[in-house]
Structure formats: C-alpha cells, structure tokens
Length: 230
Image 1 (tube, rainbow, N blue to C red):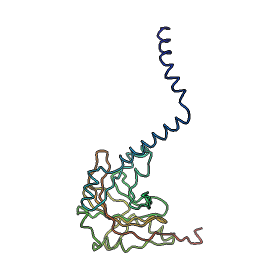
Image 2: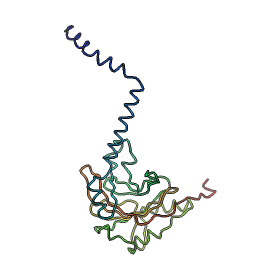
Image 3: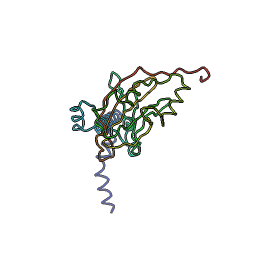
Image 4: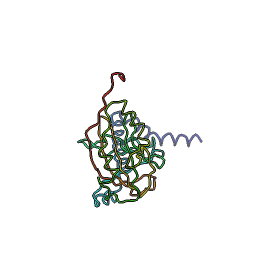
C-alpha cells in the first residue's frame, strides 16, 4: 500500500510542479482567452441560424432570436442580450434599448423606469402585407407619447389594456408561431420605434425566430419632470 502511495506521489509531481510554475500573468491571459471564447460562443448561440438569416434577407426582412427568460435566466453571461430583443442600435452596432421579451409563451414590451409600449396581434397574415393604411398601424404611427412624468405614468398604466378605435393594444400578448405583430416601443432618452414582426418558427430550446421590418423611427422621447415630482 505504501508503495502504491509513493508511486502516485511521484507521478503527480510533474503536474504539481507545472501548476505551480504558471504565473499570475499567464493565468490572467488564460482567463481573458476563455472569456473571449465564451463571448463568441454565446453570440453564435443567441443569433438566428445562417439559414434563418438568409431566408429573412431573401424576403426583405431582418431576423432575431428571442430566448425564453424562464429557461435561460442566469444561464448565460450576456443576460440582457439573451432575454431581450432590440430594434434600435447605435453607430457602433450596440443595443440602445430593450424592446421585446419572451417569457412563458408571452411577448411583452416596456421593462424599466417609465418606459412603455404597445403590442397588437394581427393574426396569421404575411409580414409583407403590413402597411400604414391598416388602422392599428396608422394609430401607432400617429401616437405621440406625453413628456410630463405624471402623464407618462398614466399612459404606462393604460398600456396594459389600451383601448382605441383601431383595436385594443396590449403590453403583453400570447406568442403564436405564424402570427404577425406590430410593436411600438418607447424608451425615454434613448429611442422610439415602430416595427412589424412575425414569429417564423420555434426552435428546439424554446427560443423563437422572428422576422421583422421597421415601419418608422421617431424623435428621441424625453421626460419633463414637474417641480412637485423633484
């Protein structure tokens, strides 16, 4: 038994020596290399497949992947990228906003602070048929968000079930494969955008591949605080 222990000790000496010979600088380099590899792998995981991107482009659309929050929460290092889709990017190609989320088979808009928005399910119609002449699209294109915080809060509360002559707008709607939606996302001090999108397919991990097109971008929304609200 002692002989076996001695053999094991002698055999592990080179490994222990190698581990001790790695400097802190080398360890940091390894960490940074692994982090870079992880970021690349996650970016590939979160992106639509090349086939999806090609098919969307062939139809004149763009494609995004929506990850179900209940499945991937705290499982990826890029948490916000995994949970939220953005339709607004800055000059560097970085996300400016969090416009759309998928959670428990529901789509939602409006997530932080005073930000809010509207969703409307157009049903099983082609994305290419969405146009400004549609009453609900015309309403969303003409809508102007308030600037006073007190009024913004009222609209934010109403957005859960916003009654209009064109139909009832929602903050959350069921996510149905094959359905087309219109979305107005208002992110104060960042961006305000109106898009149409359709759920093209559901992947094996529960994520949704969506094709989308921009209808209109608006001036950056701002909030003017009342003195009583300071």
